[in-house]
Image (cartoon, rainbow, N blue to C red; front, side, top):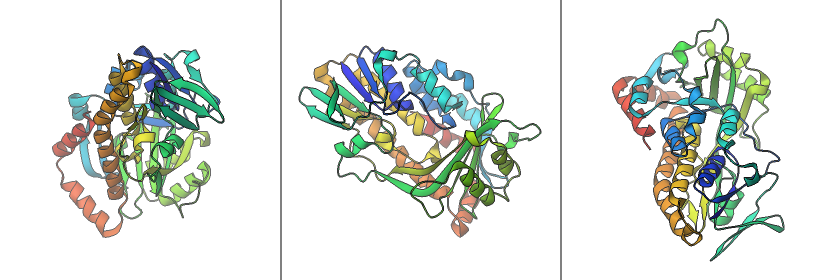
Length: 385
């Protein structure tokens, strides 16, 4: 089959490689002038690694495995609220990886032939008929395909055309500031690794993970002041967050202050306003954030995109042009229930973790009462595909 993949983010590249290896003629269309991935670090959950294994790509990232440590939720001073035995959970369902996003993108796209990639090629619309799909950019046809994979992200233009009644993305009113840096000499963060610190006074949170052997990846989630049209510039956002986190565990502001400005990234957090009624429209399938953009609270965004890519590859393997719609319907039946369930669970987690006042005090009390074994079991259950 001829397959066009629209969007060369992590999920789009993984799908393109998987479908190419399955024997299809793949064209990857990317709006940008080059293939690249912006951002800082990304946490890959065990279910995401299993999906990459299915695609034959996990070997390219296994060198970045995190140290198996106890993680969980802590208060802003680093005192335990809910402790999980990450080592035990990883023994049951696999390891968690943390890797630089740009490095991951380079590794995933390496098997894709250069002739399959078309950069500086925005896709504006799709013309679907009984025999295939015409991919349109501007006022001209870019390609003719038997199937199209839409992987153009949270603000997907094509999703809006395929599902015109859907409201699309919504802002959560929160800001994500994150960065990477070499582990500072003399700063002991061992007790904070793989943990998320939350604060019942401000509703803010801070997470920390090892990145390789000698680097750290941190992220924050806090209220976005006045919800402006765009998030503040990284340096201004850093000053805002440092002011908010001044009374936290001393390692928290120290890490944020020590991070070079060019290694800090800021986003206004957004997700789909509601689940899509389908991930498929005839010969067209949606993947990743275009299909199920979720808040980052469960760390499942990239892993769900890789599950999409693996499922698409599996269902389209061996398919001929006339089978595209039926095979994609099976993809929708497999992926939509799980991805939408996690999208809603992420939104619930966001609301729970950003609570303030009496509700947050009660939340913290309940978290302290949860046995570590039960918390570990719940964590492992989420990682099962």
